Length: 167
Length: 200
Image (tube, rainbow over all chains, first blue to last red; front, side, top):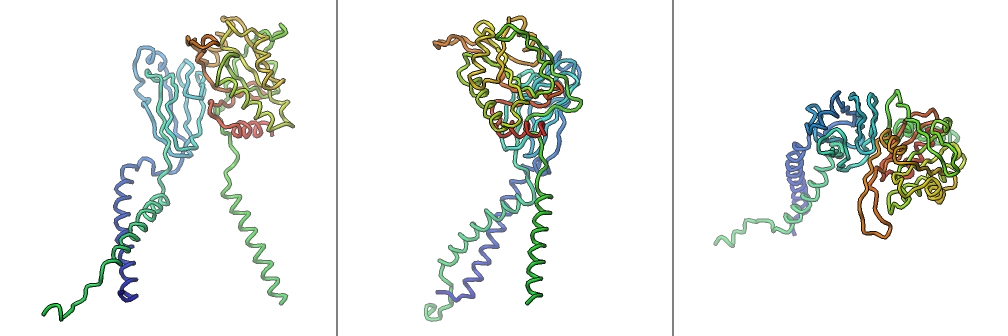
């Protein structure tokens, strides 16, 4: 049985290693999720004049994306500047008016849509990536990993210089 | 001893005040849960249909009441009964103010739904619900005005053909403006929340 001082030292070093690995893995993942690293806000989508005619010809309106990514708490405000009425899922937007949709849950929607030639519009709602989320990620992966490393370190025998064995 | 009691009292009071301030700061202000129209609110397209008694029903006559407008058909196997049952639940959740809300069901199946049949169907869910139908020409204009998609789908069911249709519920405020709309999966409590906010 190694002395208590060595056990504590091994646990602390293991936790530090676990947290370092957890930080590295999580931060690499977060690079790909930077789009959602922001506070919720109102995002405006404008349906420009002539959209209905373009869609009828099978053309995609240049200023409207095929899909959009949001964070929980965002509000999608759709302004219909076209002379025709438009639809997006639960929104029926008469010409010249606007309507908004609160996005309060993590989900992927494929809404029926009148301003896309494909008749569908994708809305991806993600959890907002905050500093708290990143810290949770690091702690939730780093501490268990550190614990496993510590367990491994405790099972491993302490190396001693035994002069008799060297004879 | 008295000082100690005084300190405990003051400390307790401070904790309560801090808790109240934090609650006020952290509580989200009440807001609509349905998809909301922006100001200036568009005027709800008016329409007129004959009701089950052969008397004209005009949407604009409902001014002063909140109207929950839903398009469906009486042979619908799923969406329509569910939606009407949920609207009934929403009204039951606000018994004192239910009279200020009018649910109007408009058929998307004029070939099978006569005005009496539409009324009988809607009334099964709540006796205050109004069920309406009309001719294809009359209804087509209303469907277009409210962006209602409907398409007949042939089926081998004993009920006959099905009608694929928009399942949106539109909320028209007491001033006759389009205010909110709800998709099929909207929880009843969200509709109740919005009705309570509008009826305050």
